[in-house]
Image 1 (cartoon, rainbow, N blue to C red):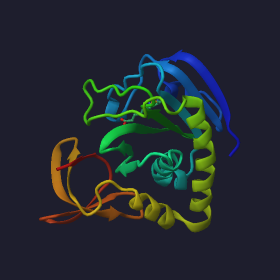
Image 2: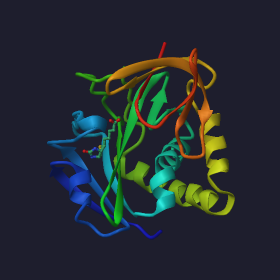
Image 3: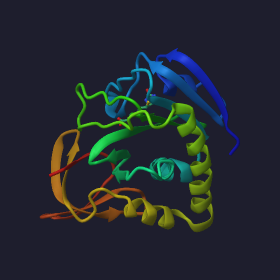
Image 4: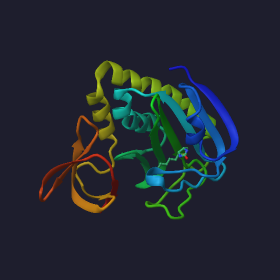
Length: 221
Ligand code: BTN
């Protein structure tokens, strides 16, 4: 895919702007006044960190797999750091949250919003402890790496299928084989994280049997 980068100083949310942009646009901003996370949470957006939204076409395949593709592309963009992935789409360093990914779809587009703590790690009202890269990488340098890694990972999806992506994602998974607690909107389930199924759901072995969880927040316990 050929990308065009559009840079702004201050926006409400790069994901909101991206809705009105063409497929192939990357919206970047220095700061966001209404940055959002999953489940409508606030994503604090001080200057210096990365706030970017990539506009992809909407297709069945991308809708299912883009969150894994993005996690992998982001991890592979940071080879000098020992990052790990946590289902569904957090990127961790030292067990703490380094980056968040927010996918939003319109009829024709999938907007992938990526926030990476490059210089500071806001932790007010955050669900998980946070960490940053200590200013070792600039937002534009990271976006350029991401463009390259997206290309590479999407090629793997195209030629080898989701199984290969899944394998590589699981190689980087933080908590495979461990007991985790999954928080759903109105219940909490504890179980052993066994893997990911072909739909991208988390496979959880509980005392009541094996469950496939499509969405939720995962806590290590
Ligand atoms: C999460 O972990 O809850 C996802 C956080 C996603 C934050 C990014 S920052 C760029 C883009 N614009 C937003 O408003 N959110 C995403």
